[in-house]
Length: 75
Image (cartoon, rainbow, N blue to C red; front, side, top):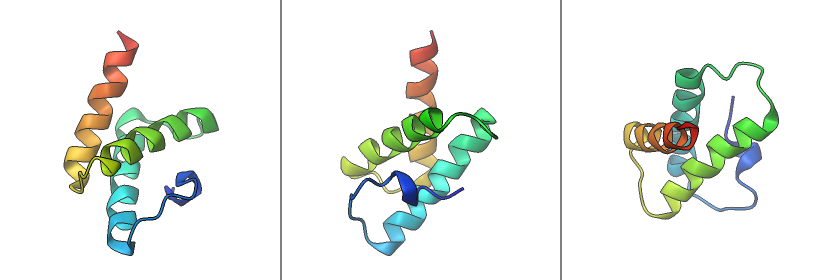
C-alpha cells in the first residue's frame, strides 16, 4: 500500500518517498488497518508527511512518532 496517492503534490526525492512509504506501511501494519476507510489512511499519511517536512527521514522514527501521536489522540 503506497503512500504516493496521499502526497498531495508534495515533492520529495525518490529515496525520501521510499522511506515515507516504508514508514506508512509500518504504521498501517501496526494498526492493522487492512480495508479501513480512506480517511484513516489519509490521516496516517498526513502525520508521516508532517514529520518528514520537519526533516525526519528514519522510517523507524517516523513510524514510532506517528503511532505515538495517533495513540495520544485516542486517549
